Length: 198
Length: 198
DNA sequence: TCCTTTCTATACTGTTTCGCATATATATTA
DNA sequence: TAATATATATGCGAAACAGTATAGAAAGGA
Image (cartoon, rainbow over all chains, first blue to last red; front, side, top):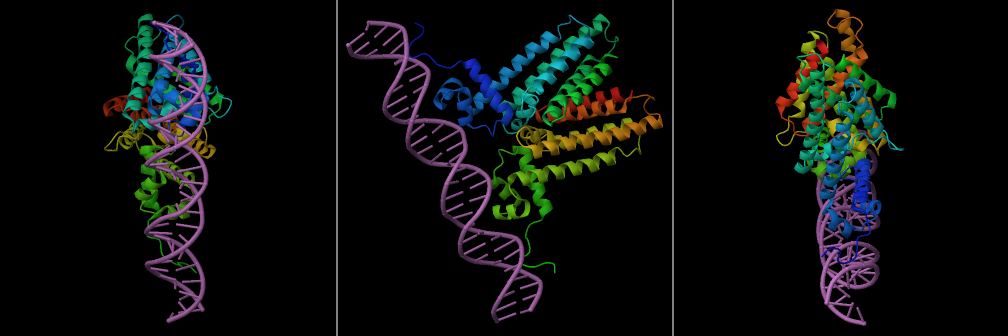
């Protein structure tokens, strides 16, 4: 017996994106339910019905961002192209994402907004930790493949190399939010690719 | 004509440290003046008289943290010891600082709490950017010296190397706040030292 | 047509927030 | 001692806040 009662007027997926954008620009603590309600075009009761309280909504946006990021990261590190090209495309995509806003740069949603809440909110901390681990693992898989293919010298510590590649991603996230210009971020990315793939 | 009127009962320097600790654990937005007032043992009117409004107080704590960090960073990168030892001691000191709390790890005060406010608060963004630039510059100076001393091969791009060393510091800051255990952070630090000083 | 179910709109409640106004305490100076 | 200058203590007040209660609207089912 599907479809009883009044149908919902919002698209949960779009609403989640709008809420994410609010949190991304303002952070969790400074984002009011009023602002979120307007951005998602959902009334507060509808927000509660769909996602739960403010923290649950925030965590849903974080998980969505993590899942999207995992997908694009896997795509870009598929192994179809040489490692140095794939790694460069990962950094380029990250920089585009971090500088996408017309206002001040937003950086990475996770590192920029979840880090501050992580100390006092264990759920947020765990989503953040899971995400960083997931990203690192995808990079590590590609690095292992690179050793097999001869793109990296045999004996390379792939876990170590992956953590360095991740570190550069973290640095791009922070520096974007600090207002670093695009060319500075691109220089860091080139440096990292050269260092890792030399 | 010094010392008129009732003398202050608080130590501005200690009060600033206490306020910094509140911001460090809770972030700017979620730190109430009530909590800050209790932590500093200053009434709200005294807080305003001494530091101005909440944002001015926050910026004062950020600048203090940056200045302290610059001093210790310069000390540890004085050139008295080999580069790999000095760099390792920088990372070790950072890890100690990031994990110092008895509760959840606080990471880096700047990256953990200023990054989230940077988008909407230009003053915070500028302090953050200045700080990252200052840290990077100190590392770069040491790297240049390392080339002169023969610790790094001639022709090394010292600016690039310094930005990688900084990136690892940023990653440690984020990963500490995500709850990564000490040994994971220490492994990243060792990896970075080996990569940079090999 | 009328009932049930589900979503939406409005408005409310009690709390917390920041910044400040007023009153009081403690020092120096005349 | 009186006057002045500065700091502290208490608490006010308007606004914002999160979450909810209640009423109304829009669909399907009988």
